[in-house]
Length: 207
Ligand code: FES
Ligand code: FES
View 1 (cartoon, rainbow, N blue to C red):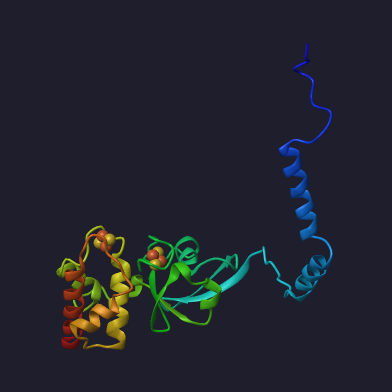
View 2 (cartoon, helix red, strand yellow):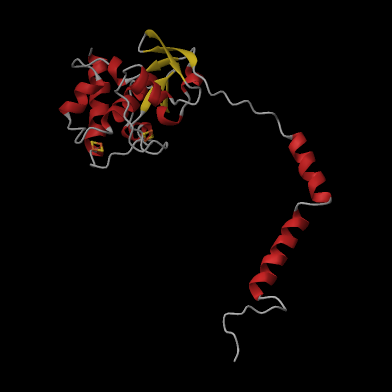
């Protein structure tokens, strides 16, 4: 009677064959001329230095000189919110698509969620906290014209409008549209935002 538990002594299973040929193929890939070219490529690579420690950062935010310790990889948004207690810019998408984190750097609107804080040293950073909240300011116009609902996107819109009016105090409706085209409001307050920007421009002229 045949012993069913006995393993075959000769030949090789398909699994053995595949395992063997896989090892042979891998060996072929990493031997001979391939090793030489890998070594050459490695030698040609620039040497990267990983800075794992913190650095001292000095930033000019809303007219004040602020200083903190951060890892060099920190974004401006993280640094403002978590280190410097400047929480006007909001984190929503965290990937440069919604505009909630918008700040003004040297007069230009910038997504702070994808800007390195260390790249902003020596530059003038402005956030919504520094804007005039009186009757001729952009925040007031947003309230008057229902430019906000949930409010997450609002600081970004206010900042984009302020930046636009700083550069162009007399914008057309199309110019306002273009000025806020990097910002998204999921609640659909766009009509109010556009009206607010035009109203703020008018109020500033009369001030
Ligand atoms: S949080 Fe920066 S663009 Fe959305
Ligand atoms: S008010 Fe802008 S997303 Fe709601």
